[in-house]
Length: 150
Image 1 (cartoon, one colour):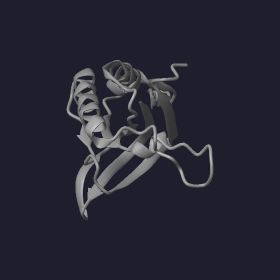
Image 2 (tube, helix red, strand yellow):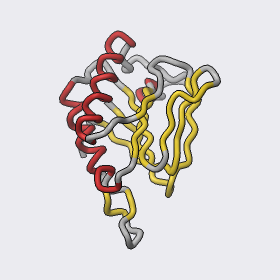
Image 3 (cartoon, one colour):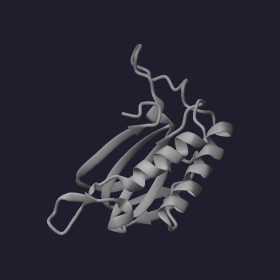
Image 4 (cartoon, helix red, strand yellow):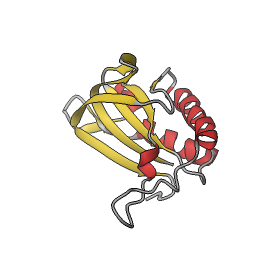
């Protein structure tokens, strides 16, 4: 399971020319799911995301986590995070989970992140053609892969 976490001052998702989700200050989480992912990946990532110290404290130093900074969260499914560009110019998505596998894991991720964070989070629309807008604050962008716990 891969996530691309971006600290934002605002973010939104548009589906069919209508805003379906939006947040103010917080994180936009792009979530990619592969066939080998399971609940352990979800638990590890959710814990890691809410504890990332990427928000400024009173002195402007990145010392506060999402939980301490009282920021919002927006989760958007993005199978292209598992693109392989090893051969040729057309990315391969062979490692990305099919919707019948990915959707239950996506829903579990959203549920678990809501529990760990202790408040509701916003989401995109799984499988939809989404237009994602954001103002990356910092910029702060962090790539996390549950299969490479560094």
